[in-house]
Length: 574
Image (tube, rainbow, N blue to C red):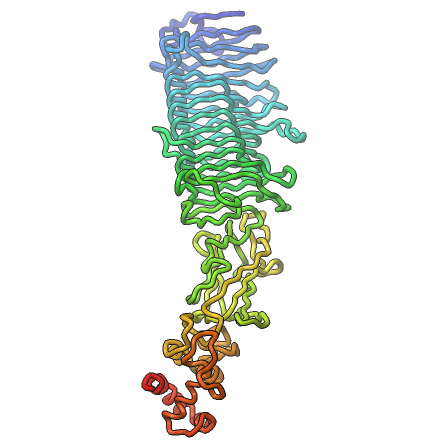
C-alpha cells in the first residue's frame, strides 16, 4: 500500500517550491494500489482537494484536526475507485465537506464514496455513482446525484444523517434491459431530521428500502415521474426531535411499500401500482390516531386486476376488510385507502348505503375509496338514477335532466343534486356509467380506469307514499307539504307526487285524502271515497263524496286553489 503523507504541490499546476500550511498540511492520501496525482489548495481555513487516480481500487482522503474540505474533485482511470473521506481518528473527521465533483468523462470508470463528516455536507455530489457506508452528523444541504456508469447503476446505501437532508436525491439505473438487473438503489438511509423540502424531490429508477426519517417533505417518484420503475420496500417516518413524523409529499411507486409506518400524519397521496402477477405485496401500513389524512391507492397500473393482501391500522386498530372497510374516513383522519378500480365506500356515502332515513334533502353523496372523475363537458350524467315504490313495482329511470352531478372536495365524493327534496315511500338505486363519453372513472391521471360496477341503494321514509314526511302518520303535516308543492310539474321527483307522474295535482290529492287520518299500513277511515274526502264533503254541505268531487271538478284553477287552502282548517276543525 502506498502512503503519501502531507504531500501537496505536485501535479495539476502547483509549483513544487510553494510553501503550504494548514489546512493542506492536514490532508493526506492513502491508496491500496496504482498511482495518483494530488493537488491541494488552501481556501482560507478550508482545503480544495483534487485527485486523479489510475488503477486504484480504494483510496482514503485522511484529514487531521477536523480540517474542513470546501471541494473534493476526483477523477479516475483504469478501474472503479472507492474514495473514503475520514479523519485520522474519528474525532478528527472533517467538520464540513462543501461538495464533491466527478467530471463526467464518458469512458471513465465509476467513482464510489464513503464519507465521514462531523458537520454539514453543503454543496452536494455530482458525477459520483455511489454514496455508501457514510455518516454525516449535520445536514445535507445540496443535491446528491448518483449517475449510472456503463452497467453500474447509482446506489445510496447505509447512510446516516444526524440533521436534515435538505437537498434532492437523484439515482439513475444502468439502463440494462433485463428485469431486475441494473436497478438504482436507495436503501438503509436514516435521517434523524427532515427528509427533503417542499421544493426538492427524490427520484430513483429502481428500489427504495429501509428508509427512515423524522419527516418526509420531498415527493418520491422515478426519474420519469411515473410509477413504472421505483419499488418501495420499508419506509418509516417516525417522530424525532428533528421532525413531526408526517408525510407531507406525494409518493408514487410501482409496488410496495411492504412496510410503511407513519407516526405522524399522512398528508399527501401515496399511489402504488405493480407489474408483478395478480397480487400486490402484503403491505402493512401503520398510522397514528387520525393519521390517515390523504389517499392511498393500490394497483394503479393497467390491467387494473390486482388484489391486495396487506393490512392497515390507524391508532393501533386494524381497518376491517381492507381496502374496502366499514370505518368512515372522518374517524381515520378524513383520508382513505382504495384499490383500483375504486369501489363504493358505503359508510362514507350519505345516506349510508342500504339505510332508510326518514327524510332526505335534495343532495345525495356517493363516496368512493379513491378519487373519481367524469367528463362534465359532455352534458351527460355519469350515473344512472332509478326509483320504485317501496311497496313494490318496476324500477323507473329518473330523467338525467332532473339531477346534476359534481365532484366533491375530496375527489372521492360524487354529489348528485336535485331541484327538490327527494320524496319518501320509494327505493332509490344508483349505478355508475361504465362506458362511453359519460363514463365514471377512477382518477389516476394518465392511467384512468373505470370504477367498479357497484349498486348503491337506499330508501326514504315509510312504505306508504302518502306519509310524505316519513313519520308513519298521514296527517296535516303531510298535507301541508303536498299543498306547498301543489300545481308544480317539474317532471322530477318531488314531495307530494304520489302517483309518480312528474306533477303534484288533483290525482295526488285524491290519493292522499283517501288515506288521510290513518297510519301507514292501515286502511282508510271509511273506504269508498276515503275518510278525509267524506269529512270535507260533509263540512262543505254535500250529502256524499261523489257530489263533492263533481263540484270540485267544476271549479276554475283559481277557485280550486282557494278551496285547497281551506282544507287544512276544515280537517283541523272536525
